[in-house]
Amino acid sequence: MRKPALPTGDAPSPHSCRPHRFARRHRAVGAGLSGEERRARLAEARLYVCTGLQDFLDDGALDADAFSAFVTACYSGGVDIIQVRDKSVDAAVELEALHLLVALAAEHRALSAANDRADLAALAGVDVFHTGQSDLNTQQCRALLGPDVLLGRSCRTRAQVDAARAEADLDYFCTGPVWPTPTKPSRAAVGLELPAYAAWRAREDGNARPFFAIGGIDVDRLPTVLETGAERVAVVRAVTDAEEPDEAAARLRDLLPR
Image (tube, rainbow, N blue to C red):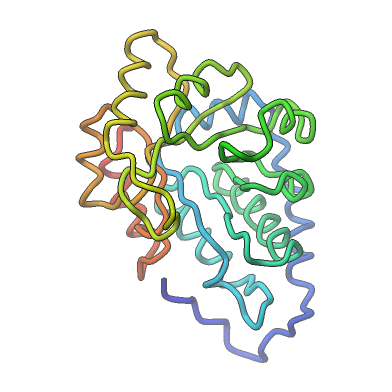
């Protein structure tokens, strides 16, 4: 992804107060969405983007301008949910990014998401918290985050899909990786069968819990994914590696159901 240029003038200090300005905006705009409002947005969501922070670091510190420009471009292009997922950065850097994300999601009437770190999710006030199969379970997440934060889980097998669909306090799940992806190099691809199974189960029993197909999906592969019956996708490189993230997001969104 092309890093946006900083405004002309003196370069900002690494200790600039800019992140605090965004944090104040977060409290004012304030997410403050109820669980019902968040779930209504999730029901309408179709495009979910996961991003790391490595492209937005300057000597280990977050480049707030570059990260904010990327997030704004994604939401402007039609992304419904953006998740920050980067296990290699300091907690303070991830928390700063999440504060920015929450504020920008509120401005765009979209959703913000965190992964893995429930403590940071709670401090930032994100809308969505996502876990894997070996992370905190749903009851533990609820105990830490309360009833209004949306909870999601990654699924790689039919049994995991069935369990996610049966769990009353889980809001959505992901099926994948559909294709091999460098984002999860040690995880074997599950192919198109798993999203097809999740879509079939939803048709059979009327349980329309949202799910997102994920893993190696781009604009060329998306029509094949939609043929399985999936209506939502989560992507990484298809947007994060694009020269113009807003245009990349818009191309994906145009192919997804309204």
